[in-house]
Image (spheres, rainbow, N blue to C red):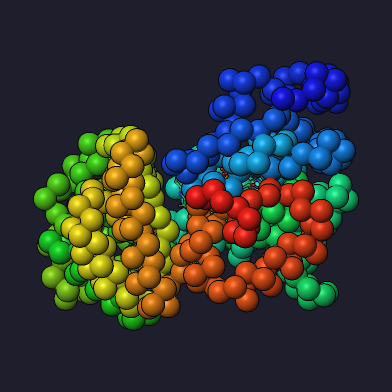
Length: 467
Ligand SMILES: Cc1cc2nc3c(=O)[nH]c(=O)nc-3n(C[C@H](O)[C@H](O)[C@H](O)COP(=O)(O)OP(=O)(O)OC[C@H]3O[C@@H](n4cnc5c(N)ncnc54)[C@H](O)[C@@H]3O)c2cc1C
């Protein structure tokens, strides 16, 4: 229970509206979008300036409270859950876009800016910020950087890391840091910026970001292909890549997901199809025409059941928007959706789908799979009920066996959602104790007092909790 004198002090510094200490508010900030994990912060503060972030860190240290940075809480691995209590520092009210610099093609923003707000601000100046996680209407840039978020355009345009040029923030000891900036080349010493990208709030709090912008594509074409067998869809993905066509978007949905999305948005997706691919090629109009033709030839060759080309930008947007609803649409079906982030070399997608099917039958589970097929990044999602412990044990076995297969073919346990609380055991399995040890030393160098986001990424040998 937090002391009244401390609440008074925080209210005085941040303003009452920016301090949450009531039980009901703390409950709301006790979880993120990861099922089955709940924490309880002692207090949540919403700084509105970098100086206030620094003050919050200093107070948390004086009070010996763990510090948990948080954006919008859309994380899917439990990264912003205060599992050991402490102070949640929520960045959503530090949210100004300071500059869109058209001469340097950069944007400088506070960490709490919502992803799509930057996209729109860049577009208004004729520029393009490509990273577009499915959560882009809610997630923050700070959260995207801390998780190195991917998105629907990842195949051609890369992930958040590819756009991070500079970062400013506060370390766990209250000292400010600054790394990188507007210079496009910078090899002065170790790349601290690259260590901070994907650090899941365990190394420091990012308060300001400088991001790369690019010219937008002049043209694009959106193609939807349906398949009677998901393995043929996977084969089409491999063949498109092998033909050296790199679409901006190459997304897959299985039959369960198609049906859930159709129930949700009702745009006429065929319910009887085993899978669909959403393909978007973009760039110079001549290249777009050539690539769209090449893609259609491959789809014909592999015997796609049906191929549909979006008639106009409105229809294309409707199809992409429908894909973005996949997780929410699946989540309507059952009390608990356990979504994973298995990522494999693209040539092994068909094998991975076959394994998902085998394990689904073996463990008698309802599973919907969708994902960024062009990146080899699949989100098999178990539709379950966390109150049914026996079913949850089967879900656990399903993923346990799936990750054995994924790792055996050179894949990874997380393509974009991070390790957080949910994947600590899997990380150890993937990189071994030597790899974990080196990462812990990096953590120690940034955060020697272990104030930042304790309990995340690494399994503590004395930790007896399941997470
Ligand atoms: C419907 C849905 C669709 C999604 N689609 C995608 C997708 O396509 N691709 C993808 O990659 N992810 C996706 N996600 C996952 C999630 O949206 C991303 O991980 C996102 O980057 C999290 O941003 P956030 O602001 O919500 O961060 P939070 O969930 O609040 O935090 C995530 C992590 O970042 C840390 N953190 C947050 N802000 C800061 C900061 N300023 N400084 C330091 N650390 C910080 C937190 O401590 C935590 O460890 C999806 C989630 C949902 C619910």
